[in-house]
Image (cartoon, rainbow, N blue to C red; front, side, top):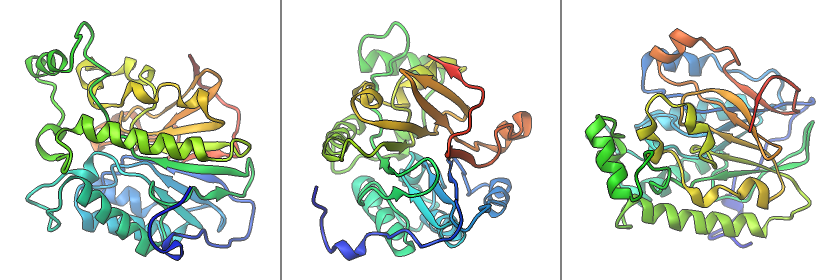
Length: 300
């Protein structure tokens, strides 16, 4: 698989001592003051620890850069993939880029910080539980996780509007130059699928994305209408088709471990203050992905 531009621009993991852990977090929402304090509290336990950041770092580019710079200076290597909030274009942000151009800008910000993105070669975790390749994926959603009973995107969206459950993406996540977000999603899925298929099947993958690869995690959401903004059926078999050691995701703000077809799925979100104040952080702020430690988890 070839990559555009000068190969020397791609982030290279730092050398580090110690066994190390592969950790993950998402949905930091660092534009919120109380969540910013959480970000400032995140530290590795070894100079060999790596960190996956699975989207929704913040809405403004300056906040995204601040968080990733802080984490990149603390952890041996950081891997980032965008959530929907990084892709919002709002009046509060000095960066007014939309859609693909906004995403490309965020990728360049990450590269200046030495942070791996979905546009870079998959970094290989060399520590305990490895070697594995970390595949950050950016695939969006295409409204195929429809509201129960709806048979079309239009019907599903209409039911969501009737229920008053509408994602802010509909107003501030622009798909330019694609006509729709689902068009952008299908293009991202095709590009990502090609890269996963070209990967050496003898090296297991940790697939890390903001949206869940399968619909099942959305079944516990309070508002089933929101599921249509949570993924695509096009990725439903990736954990079976490819040699996947674990899947990391966020977006749902329901941190937990589940198993599908024998593959471990980790939802690693921090969420909003009103959520973590009520629920606490029973699984810790940073989730250990590797080495895997046996624990409780739901099986599907």
